[in-house]
Image (tube, rainbow, N blue to C red; front, side):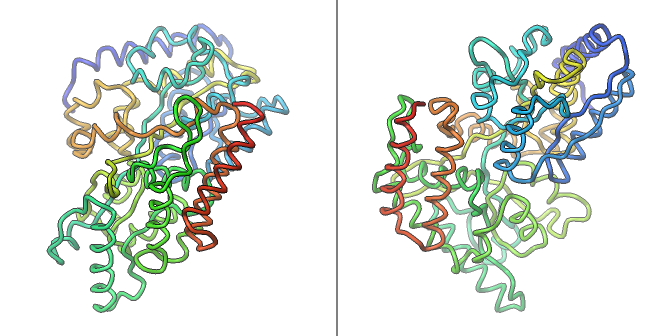
Length: 425
């Protein structure tokens, strides 16, 4: 591997984290870290954590979070309410710091200033009341995956608008079914009623110029014609280019269809790249990644995602847990996760790393997608964000399933959000 100038700083960061772990936990500790639920998350979380534990005389156990981020948050809130010490290092979504702020440790005394090397916007997102409640772990944004071989076969360009996507998906779907693949679909995405649908629907609405549900001042903006049209457009995909089952699909459901070769296009997060390029993947070498399409009168929009590592206030080994969190978010670990698992680093310097760009060419090409992504209104709605998001995904799901038109759904949603806002956000 080539060595970058950032590697020296990375090794110093890792060494500092190790030193903190040794100094702060003279006795061996048993720590539990929560990792994601998909295969990539477990592989690229558990391995690094367990190796750190062995090197520092600790035992590290892995807790696999629920597949649904909604279920994950609900379970964490139950555990924190009970002041459970079962999990020491917690993987939290980018929209959770404000929801979980009373249960997380301030990491500034343990960071050695390492947060200054991460994307400032993410550090600011994780800082509440001057307390650093999570170290940036990896950053996400929604992407369009496509089959390069099928675009070539049907002489199609990568679609830049949602209408172009629908037309290309239909043409490929019809052709592949006629050629003997009756289960082939044009486009798969996350349509289940959960946080993932909030991400997809926000992308549709923002790309049509319909705003982002609640603006930065706290004003409810969802009830507008562009937002309604975006939802109606997506509803038109069901039964046409997208299977009806997409109404129950989360990330891994969509990837399962896509990676077995049964879809032309997919919306998903960057983690899907390395899995689709694995040696046992039926579509290895035949995929491409692009920004999500644009709606009428809008601009490209990808929902900002990402995860942080936080330490529970109820951990019995806070200093050792903080050392583990610092190690896991260090430059060296983030680089390996990027090269082997296509996780987007939260350290800008790593986007110039030759090894990372060789493994993930799209990280350089799509850097503006990650840096200019659309944020969910989690900061402005604070503790009420889970209620806001649930109301949004329920309204979106109603449109997708044909229960309501886009106009009806956004009007009803506005009323729900006003009632939530009256209780304060």
